[in-house]
Image (tube, one colour):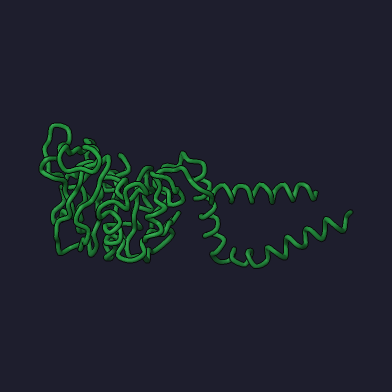
Amino acid sequence: MRWILLSIIAVVVLIIAVALGPSLAPFDVNNTYWDGYSTAASICLKPAYALNGPINASAVFVIPEIRIPRSQADLLLNYVEGGGRLVVINGGPWSNELLRELGLNSRFLNTVIQDQTLNYVNNKFPLAFAISNPAIPINASVIVLDNATPIMIEDPGTVILAETSPFSRAGNESGPFPVIVAIPLGRGYVILISTPSVFMNSLINEAGNSELLRDLCNGTALYLENTLAMNNAQLLTRSYLYTAYSVMLTYPLNYLLITLPLLISSIVLLIRSKK
């Protein structure tokens, strides 16, 4: 019996250690490598693994690599309409699906932007330039991109926050291309960013990328990790653990946390008494 208990404890500790350890998932806040978001998290992004009610944050960042449930999309919609700032970073087809769920017509296109003239390192890293506007103040002036796509603007009142140079190209089209825009929705804004690479560890300290992040966060912002691709076992395990933890903190399960040490001690004493 003792060995069974010790084995269970060891497995739980191992799962927690793996889940909370360094990550290899792209755009994960626990990923300290070139494609991670650990630096962005240290600046202003606070990871969140579920939305269970009204959102209290200066901004919410999301990279929709999976389909976002309708219930969560509704919470995001209510947040924006109430005056919130939702930053949708292009993570693939599900990003456009989220925009449709929010009732927007603008979308991310599939073509990749290159710039032979104004770039960082090579033409695959085009530069974007911030545009002064009254809606979302941007202090950054030059932004380094990678694998960026044009944004098709189809919603009235949309403000372009940054665009590429006239020398840029995407497919057979010539620039400039909008790569960061703000769409008014209710009393708030949905901000579109055409690539998640802008805040990766490898680029966030280049040009004005980190300054752009601070501008958009406007304080401490939530970063929805549960919308990243869940084919990564570590990320999936961490999401489950954080969800379970948040559930245990709610009434009446929060009392279980108080009594758990006593329960474990009682089991150990019971085992010893049977020796």
